Image (tube, rainbow, N blue to C red):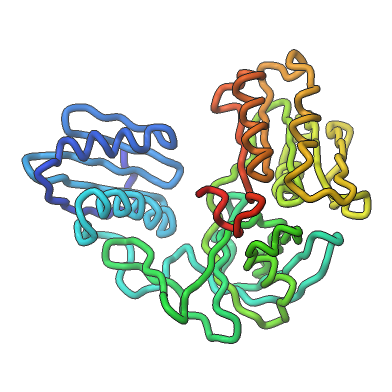
Length: 362
């Protein structure tokens, strides 16, 4: 049920396949949201908001609601992205709450570099400053950074009339990548982002390149935190390579003292140790490459395969962030060997050896 203080928006979509599209929309999102569908009607409830779809004849009425402008934008984008592909690019026209058409998205902030320093030989930290971050950076582990062309004044993305992001092209094209917020200070309007400096950067890593060359005053765009919630369980198994260290540190900082956490971290050598929270409830095992290329050693899957399955317990959550090859093996281990249900594990490929940054998913 919608609450009085929620923001709301509506659109009417015309299609001869109205019933089939509502059913297909429901199927597309049932794994990432709560979806109910029956007889030409569907309701989607996600962490961002709610969407109600009703097919009647050759029309689909869509009503969305959310607690604030940022979440309303996200739920509108979910609807618009689906129907722009299924029906056509001009299928969605919103009315009601929420700005659209040549305005900056409410989940966007322009950030300015304050400082840059190496915290390990393979990790560089940028401190970024921006306005109105109190609610903006409150949730989620990860943000999307937008890197403008070097030497040019940035042209930032806007919202189209359908609620989707309109990206600048040509000489103004932006490159975007996802990173973990290492720390934030809302009062000062600052956040810190750590960038792993791997040898795979030669394949194309605009984020690491930006971090290495960043000077105070340089501008970078930022899309609001989303996803990457802290796992909720009495026992955690966390593992990853250098790229996962900021996320692992954030998770450890926010878990209660009674939660047991076992860590398996792959880095090159002891000099590359990253500052991680400690405690009697945290057991840390370092795995050293000793000069071998990252993403080639199999150290993570080898160490995790030696864990006693019976020691995991019924309330254990497994989290891993790593190179694509390790991702394949660790996900297989979690699902086939440990038989962990979907809600008790998350394995993510943060990069893929031999591919430019951002192409791991492809």
